Image: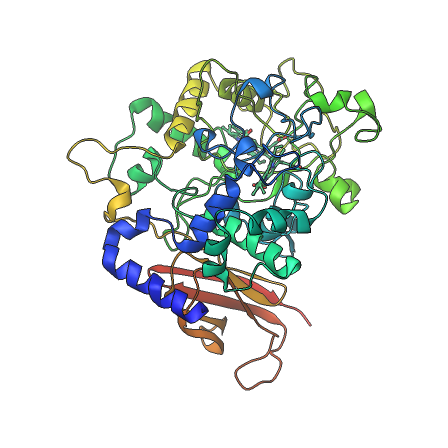
Length: 473
Ligand code: HEC
Ligand code: HEC
């Protein structure tokens, strides 16, 4: 069955040519159906999209149910979580949560505090979270999908009978969601800034000044990467590291009022972020650097948008003012006074005009930009300086990658002289979606490689990526 699926996908790609790139592949389409299915909560009525709406860049849509600010009620409406939903877009490109030996810091993972290893593991959480979709167990989710209109389609994608075993099916649910998050509908790379990088749009004077400040005096790009990667990958506006910016509490966070069962500390509850997950004092208060793609998207101007993990700031101006004057202005104290970053922010010496310009620049990061008349639209296969990242990464002895369509994939391990020491993949990979290839640290001759620096390289169609890895024995 899987083989036939693959052949169908390949035919679809041929038939549609460039246009196919704007269409979802079957696994992405399945992920979309699950993502928007508001029957997958208990009581029914809440889909992933309730807290990650396309109208808000797949972050929190602002509406009446969210009058308290950034934090959302669950399927049970009197229950509130404790943080603002970050974008469920561009998140798939985060590497698996890990400690980077070279840089000496934690990188990657999902959630503000990194507690989920990757997008696939993350997607298994909300369905069962009592403060979110509140299903008692994974079986309930699968039973609902078995009875859904897309039950047949599910099995077309993952094979007949793939809804039978609950654990296996639940894994597929998460894979389909991750594939959708990775799709060109969700992680679109179609902002004005992408067009600018591809030479297909000009930035206004204010936006140009904002970009210069973002990368210069404002120091924003130190954490929110703004330049394409070494192989032309479009920037994700995060380096997926963790920092304590000294963000103050948000007194309006409804989580403070939650009963002791959910919040035993009441008003005194403190969000320790990464430090709490790891139980490490030196990581207390650190949150994952969020992408700034679509951060300026305001679906309904009459509602207030909120920023930071707890939504304490109500405008992008306020955010930049905070970076600019945290240490010299009158701001409330940090929620977590330990480990506050004093090296990269706090007293930037920006003028009001500079702040305006940085905000103007962030306005260029919203997807769906239509190039000026006479210029070819981005999504139609116009020449791009960028290749789209597939999100390949090496983790736990596996190369994992997400393919948006079946492709000839080549992947291998190379030593520092560029010699391939282990061939991992060479050939057509199928089906589309998340893939993994195990690697046990041996070379092509079956013998263990010596400890040291290696590179893994993966090529899939126009996408190529090489990353350094440290082999330790
Ligand atoms: C009730 C609102 C709500 C619902 C429903 C919900 N989420 Fe979230 N989501 C959140 C919040 C809040 C966070 C941040 C939680 C944290 O960091 O502790 C989050 C975090 C995430 C992240 C992490 C992004 C990143 O960059 O780290 C992803 C991805 C995500 N959600 C996807 C989903 C998917 C998929 C579903 C459906 C299966 C879903 N969410 C359902 C509120 C929600
Ligand atoms: C030291 C790393 C670092 C630097 C430098 C930095 N940021 Fe951030 N940024 C973060 C982290 C971490 C967060 C989340 C903090 C939190 O929630 O407490 C964040 C959050 C944000 C948010 C809120 C996003 C959201 O979804 O709510 C915006 C906007 C932002 N940064 C813009 C900027 C701008 C503009 C600059 C330069 C003036 C900048 N950042 C400099 C690390 C950094």
